[in-house]
Image 1 (cartoon, rainbow, N blue to C red):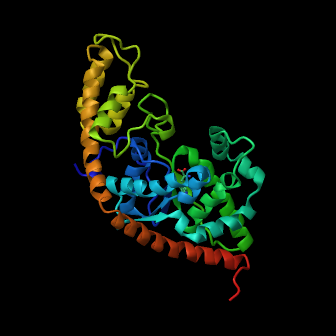
Image 2 (cartoon, rainbow, N blue to C red; image 1 turned 180 degrees about the vertical axis):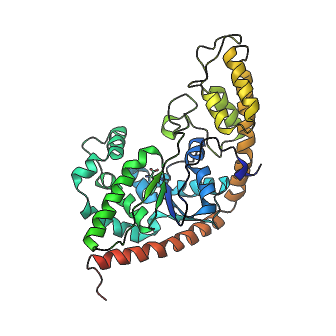
Image 3 (cartoon, protein in one colour; image 1 turned 30 degrees about the vertical axis):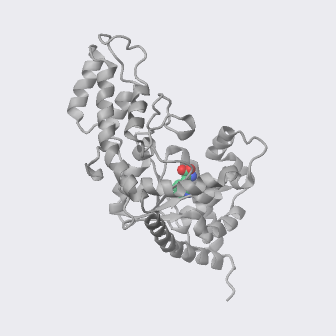
Length: 349
Ligand code: TRP
């Protein structure tokens, strides 16, 4: 099964036509899962045919709340890169880069920090939620509080016009545009470019336990590199309809994770609609639904796992790809940093 033929039910947000530059990224803190696949990866596979696309392994940003485990971030740079390549992100079409290896991004961050107030950073809803989630309370690392400035640097360094992100990242885009406008006013020139968030319409894929979000920290994921046995075990745990006690009982589809996943991944839509009708009518057991789900997921993930395993054998090749992508990206970021510094009076020779 070739990946571009994957079912596309969780609509790819349509990007505006015309020349656009995409910048998107992930914090490399763990392997990617089906939630990433639906929410971003398969969209990137589409976009790379239409636009210039930069994909950032945001290792520096990951350190803002992982200083106690720098090794985890280091390891996951390669893991996430493997996930990218295994789902069909093509390094000949997309530029994959490692954030920390582009010092100009840190440099831009340093200047942008003067174009944003501490109060504004404290008000950023994403940062606020994340601080609460991590229990930082009064001990917020300064780098964490200020990471919106770093993200503004990531985006603006590439003069990105489109930033595909989850809904939770919209405040980051707003804050980026504030910094961009502020800088352009100071420079009295349109050096930096405002960007637009591209948010998938269909929202998030729930976790196998029925929680709204599939997430590593909730332990409710199915990873893209999951083994056949892991997939089987996960499908067994998939949350269905707690009121559907006997096969003959009518079942409910709302919040039923088995059907939500089938909607997202089952390529045979007609058969799926029949199954749903049967389930709602009564007479269709969860075990049949789960059998179908298991088959669909096994078939979808087998080629991804195979490619991942193949690529994993040659880490040198992966590092070479990342190095080339990073070098290409650095040229672009360095050009922007040069323009920014000149506009701030920081060009001397
Ligand atoms: N903050 C993003 C996340 O947690 C990752 C990220 C870093 C990013 N830099 C970016 C996303 C720039 C989009 C654009 O997922």
